[in-house]
Image (cartoon, rainbow over all chains, first blue to last red; front, side):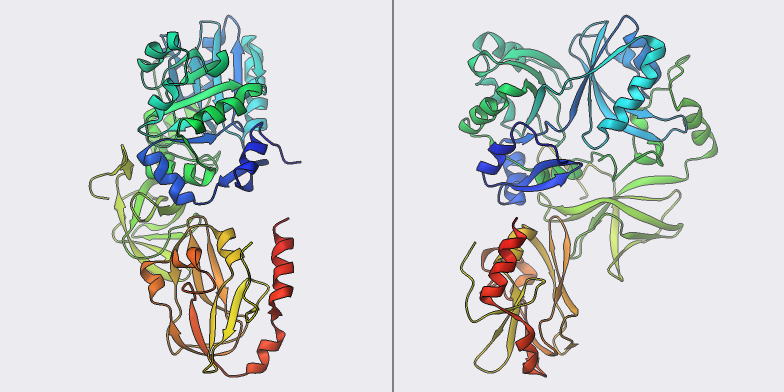
Length: 366
Length: 131
């Protein structure tokens, strides 16, 4: 049975093309994915991301639990509202999911996890939480709207109650705070996102989501579908769970080494496996590819290197760059000239450091 | 849905065929199909002079989202391709039944056209596709 967010009728009224997205009936676009992509890069766009799941953790030993559960260290979270990006690993060092954790009090942390992995994540978290007597509470009564783009923060700020504006305006990157939205609706405003642009992800009680969406639309924020979200996050060099990593991939192999905290004396799930893999040499690396020729790089295409075959992970036409880019996982070592097999044709590609786009502009060398 | 020109014949896979005054057959994809595909960003055109067989893939259109094979509705020889699509693939989004045509075939067996759907039959198929 397909699930629907509280904004489903709103999307349909806007003429959205709906698709099944991890068991959810979600808008892929409202007409033109490319226009929606540019709307976010150049101004402000909004995404219904209510299919993602909010999970609240309560208990005296919540911090200890998260020290054990996550590969990144929650000890970095010291200030109320501060957020951290982390992988949640299994014992073999495979990625169960990537998530954001918010520090809301010594006995209260909030997780936001992916839509497609929700059931698996919850089962895993609940199992691990038992030993720490942490209460795991899913919050389906919340919807979530991401407002992204260079004008996104200003557009949201004008809708907030005036007493909250300057405080939310000063909110640092990767931090969250409560505020009052239109008609006094209670919002949890986080300066996070998934597009490489500045902006907010707003958690709102489901009964207020339509009113918030409409207020944002009236303020000139363009509705954008999950299609644009995908090309934006690819350009910004952000991994997508299921495409760029899963349980068969370690964070080292998914270019997520920066999220692993090998802090002394912390025994997190997967640590032993990660240390072993690092000592033995990581067999595969994740790289960025640019196709200067015509064509589009796609998930699953074969990548040919001097060290053997690799595979395209996320790949797409990049609207900001007007050419195709991709992530690929290839054997470690000097790759030589790299080619991609596009329907039997071997096409040369350039290996690049990503992100491909930063602050709305192509990165150097892309 | 946009009006489907009555002089077109269709494959179930959403390609259209139009018999021109000179007997050549022009081929494209339907307005319904371009809408399903979304923003087109690349068209892999066939070679002029290539022999094609009805029902086989001869071109590829790629939208941001996916690549789709384009089948020839008729057997024969490719006599012209729409070079405009090299620089402006979005022409198919804008005018699928007109400027967005893809290739032109000199048919070897016009009788094959009788196997295709007419505009009414295709419209019914496209409508069912929407639900």
